[in-house]
Length: 330
Image (cartoon, rainbow, N blue to C red; front, top):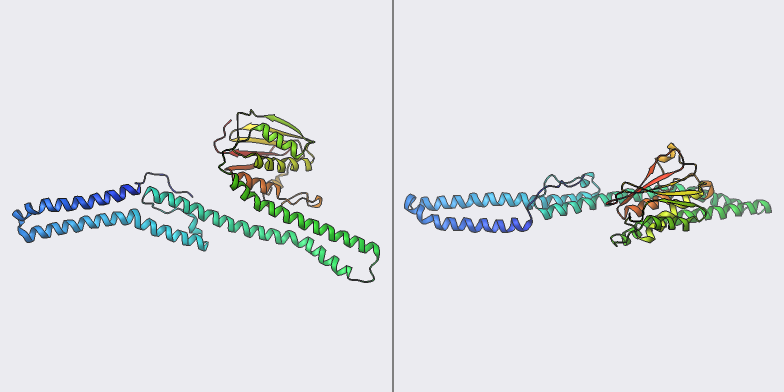
């Protein structure tokens, strides 16, 4: 949910309008009082002027309370709700008094969403890490217990040592993938807004560097640029090209589509059952081959940090991913 886009008075208009209203009320009272005395007498004129001033002040106070006080208090409550993780902290307020408070409300809403998403993300990662590390840790514990047997033969001892090495390597890959995922967001934020663009030929060059045995077909003119720094483009294509090569593809194609670039390969493709889980951290179909399942998750985070997105596109042959960016048109 987003803050509704509609006209709101700027804060400076509210402030100077209030001052002008106070000044106008005083001037009208000063000018009208002598006339009212001649018509109503001093007590009647004083009472009428006093009541008029009180009514004017009440109306002005109610207006200021609606435009300033209520939104400020509501924003404060919304920040507290976001801090406590209450779901209402994600919803926009029903009313924002001024243009500045509307912008502040948008920022508060974004902050609440980011905090909530980050908390959910951390919880999910913690659960995944616990699950993924349990298997190699179990192997290490079993191997350590068996290695304590003094009567163990040499062949079994060698096999257990290999198990320890494999489990340790698996844990190192998982931890390295987690580190890369955490650094992807920081790397993206550091490069965001730098004004550096990348063309299709740059993406193709990055793919060749990642997997030089793949053939690269480019069907997109270089006049079309995507808002990615070269280092981020290299990382994105590294993951996509290596993923294609590891699954048996021999060719990658880059095709211009509305909003971005379509990256496809001629590999075996992705089953419908796995398509919905491609961007989940630690999901992999190559676990026995050492896959960590973090490549596409890192790619998605890098693109998101630059206002981009990656989606899986079902196709009759091979795997296809659409990289989309705001402001990129075919």
